Length: 146
Image (cartoon, rainbow, N blue to C red):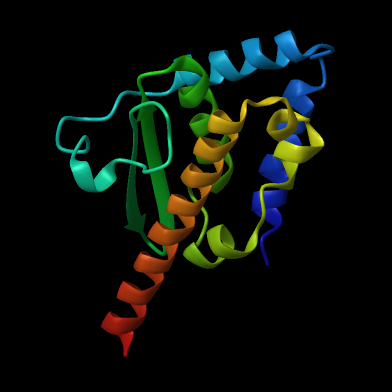
């Protein structure tokens, strides 16, 4: 059901395969963060602020043709990169996939284990917020169908 999500996780693992040290991983995460487009002022609203992140992190989501699209921005490079890793995997997926496909690639790459507790909490909060948004979109779709 969520093969595309797993394929995207595999692609990210491949991108990180050249990282031999934790410093290399951090550099790659920062690169991901720098590649993200900035959010608009309309997206930087209190309701899009991700609670639980030590930095200012915004997450915007939209549903187009049954697929959820995420955009994120943070004022910290590492946080922006971690958000980008999640956005790259989950954006363009169905809400069901966002809810059911766990981000196992983060553990497999050793990213979760190498984070400080506050950054790990922020990453968890970001993923939780993505799942909450997916559930919100799923409920809204079911209301309009039913």
